[in-house]
Amino acid sequence: DAKTTQPPSMDCAEGRAANLPCNHSTISGNEYVYWYRQIHSQGPQYIIHGLKNNETNEMASLIITEDRKSSTLILPHATLRDTAVYYCIVRVVGNNFNKFYFGSGTKLNVKP
Amino acid sequence: NAGVTQTPKFQVLKTGQSMTLQCAQDMNHNSMYWYRQDPGMGLRLIYYSASEGTTDKGEVPNGYNVSRLNKREFSLRLESAAPSQTSVYFCASTRGTGYQPQHFGDGTRLSIL
Image (cartoon, rainbow over all chains, first blue to last red; front, side, top):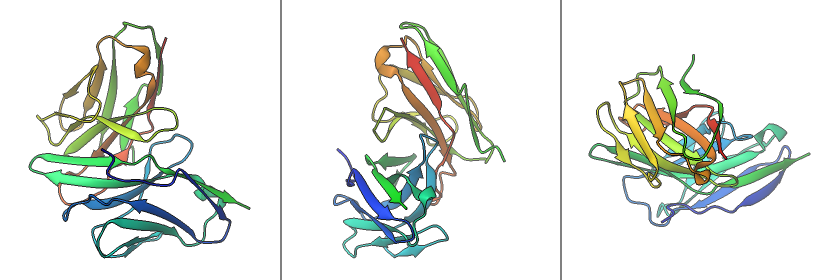
């Protein structure tokens, strides 16, 4: 069973904010949400992660709803180089296991 | 900074041949992972090793075996390759404690004819 669902594709104008949604309605209380992106079939690149509070770093912001059933990744000023597939991931940690569950990803097309 | 290194980068096999994909990390990470990515799809976990000396199945383990050789190295073996195993294979590692992110290698592109 998929732990996350994402729209298959989105468009964004260069210089505008890109808001990428993710549903994770079955997430448990101690499971983190991670976002990665993949450019041209390279290895996925880490962007940001969070549990329940909103997070911000130099790349992006992560907004998690209060019920934790969904989140949004925000790229504040998208550039052409941000064109990539963005993955929303749930991390499950337990006694001697530590798994990351990838969704199918959203292809973000940043257009001039 | 090498990070996660995968070898080879490309490989073509014939059906029935065997092959081992190598992965090494130099970040002193405890946990290591093997994923496969089929065209247009997300990553699916094949096997993982939460710590040295342990391995566990992921979502799609059939047809594969793994060895956690030491803390640095985690190999993936195809004993009898099948065309359905044509894919891009990614290795990843993470500290395993706390909630540090995974670091990925550049992938091995494997074609089975």
